[in-house]
Length: 440
Image 1 (cartoon, rainbow, N blue to C red):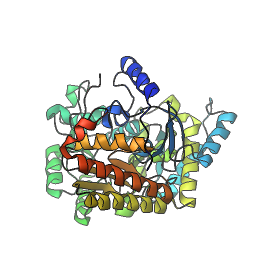
Image 2 (spheres, rainbow, N blue to C red; image 1 turned 180 degrees about the vertical axis):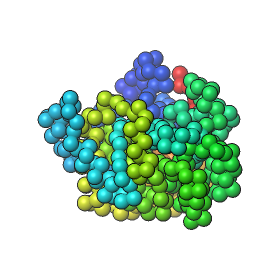
Image 3 (tube, rainbow, N blue to C red; image 1 turned 45 degrees about the vertical axis):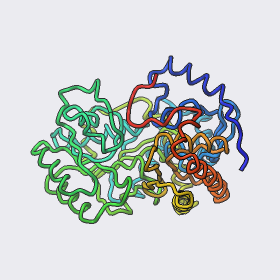
């Protein structure tokens, strides 16, 4: 496969400017260049269409990394979603009056999730989760939340690290700093481990009579056991607290709607974002009437939640996702990528661990991961791919592109195997960072 010398002068120059102007360099931890290999990762894009991305230096890449961090489930600049959004932009995206599309979106989400009765909307996933937790606290009159998984940057979640600084380390990434979170929230967020009933019951016991909600992702690295699901349901019913399922990452991947529908969870509230707007800002909180009606007893309101494009994009995304059977295609694509990693690692004698849930999968090197994955990223860039340890399938991915990706992986895995411990001496950037930390 043809390789090129990395030409990223404009990209690197803007990174150096950004780090002086924007604390943390970017708005999203997952998009920081140090997560891949600072010094080679392009960071900024000029154009994105389908799965092709053009950076500031006019390099063209096929995106086989984490596809807009899971937001662009259909692919970049999807024509059907864009057409719907452009149409309402030309007609007016904001007004003193409300957009009728939010009513249509509520109807569509409740149609896909017949257990739910009502819906509220916002724009980002973190704020939608904060909305859901506040509604639950109002409904129960209690404060303490038990949770597992990753649920965003807001105070209610980071409060878990106030009492025990590493409480969140095993939920997503290590080192999440609770600086700025009021110390008075200590003890109001208690983590538990997925599929671990004994650990879950300890968290419930710790919350005691102050339990306000059970919050969890439906799936991340592996499917839930029926015993675990039954335990969650039993406690929620006995304690009379809402079960909140965070579908921000999982929804509209393996099926039409929330993954909980396929896995067997029976929530009282479910939260959606990311894929919902296919790159446009859209999030939703849906739930049963007994808990959702308490949203009127709390002050939950924001001007831009009434902006029109989010609801329109979501409606267009859902319509197309169902019409083209996107989940079936994405699952097949991720099957192929999983097989590429597994087969080629074995071929070249590399020990890797593959995990995640299809179509959101990832791999890691068992030895020297931060160096090996940075080299992998570096060499894949030279072959025309944005690639790292994760892969989020998009509907726009084709099997022909996957075949090209496989040939590139074959070559790069061969190089890693050949270089062995000498890989670090061939890095053109820095090793990939892990955990949470400052970027200077």
